[in-house]
Image (cartoon, rainbow, N blue to C red; front, side, top):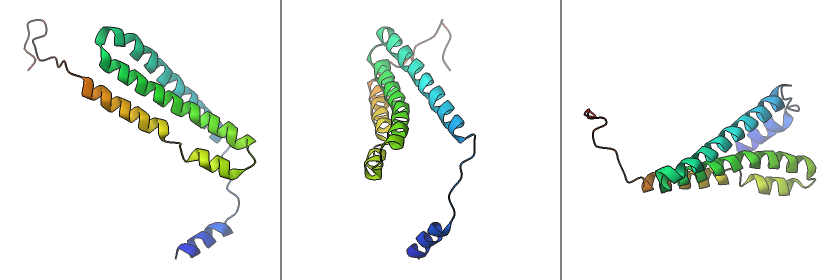
Amino acid sequence: MLSSYFMALAQSGPMRLPSYFPWVVMGLLGVGGLGWLIAAALGFARARAFGESPRWFAISAVCLLLYHVQWFVFAVYGINEANSENVVGMAAFFNLFVALGAVCAIVGFMRMNDPRTGDLGGEPLD
């Protein structure tokens, strides 16, 4: 059954991407990278006032910024590299910075230790 699936894929014609595809991908990578850059800058700026936990979230934002940069580097490397094994080897690590960002966010949540349970302005929270 699996071999018939690959045979069916081999018989199909070349895949044609829509003309808007590269513009949408590059636009979303750019907007996403800019957003995570702003989040990292705000996180490091707020870390001085709010302690250690926001610093971990800012490091998480830096990891996701690097994730966006990694896709750009992967595209440039894939275009310029003749050996497809090297390109596939690099693609194996596509989710590395997402995983590192998740670890940093988890550490940030674990370091949150000052819950606000008191009254705000004399009014009860409930």
